[in-house]
Length: 406
Image: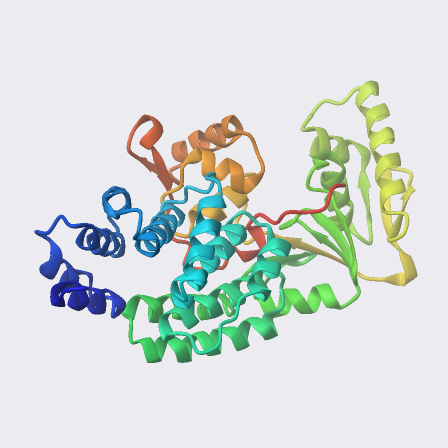
């Protein structure tokens, strides 16, 4: 490795992309192309970065397996930054295995962390936790240690374990301070700020209260019957009843919970669950059927009793009823939450993360664009969607989570 390549690599490790480009910008040999690609990625020019990395990978000979594997890992990180989540993880796993076999432990761990971060974006928390548990993060360079701790913190936050999240963020801050990379320090500071921002609203008869993640965790641990409109389900202590795929039943449960300890008029329930303003006998019959289904589902948590004007929710053992609402209103809250990270998402990646069809996501994006809440860049297959960062609160509870079948 010549002196210019070594100097450029040191500049990139310190986060000085422009300094690296000054040394290799006019060179077209594979090592220089790889470094140029990484520098362009640090500057946010992801399509150009990916092109350079692919050229570099093709330029390395058959005996340069290690260099090709490093290019594959760098390209995978660029794809993650571009929110292209649909590719097969096999090439990344193969590159990680090659790096481990050649004793390049740092880059092998980088490959494993990319896969963990991809799983987190897709809401596959159990797989992400298992992958993270297999990593050996001892004696790492400070920059990689920061990334590993940030991944651990995000996993803990998504699981509402704020204590472990705070500890991981403290370790990430210490590692980022040692790395002295401004972008890493800013990312850690942003993650730490999430803990103090409003994450949900607690609805009550007199209005609503804003809750941060610690307070949300306290509500969920209180043993109350919680109707969680962020993750669309019912929780009491350790018992969780997901209703994300049963929107009518969840709408009825939320309406009953918001009126607790009072009852809800039948016509109001029909309007809430079926979006119908002038109900007839068929709608009343359908309401009785859906109430019967909800009653059977929540049997272990609460009973639903008929009253003269409608229905009332009676939690078991005299428990209180709490309604947690998202910090932002609207049926596309999870979509807005994904876009609020500031990255440019494709509709295919959004559909993959949300577990919805691409056409459903496209319709929702058109509505949000008409309301001025998102914007698009590019055309046709290169079109990407963004929204302004939501600095006033955290959207942790709105991010997708892979739930067990209902």
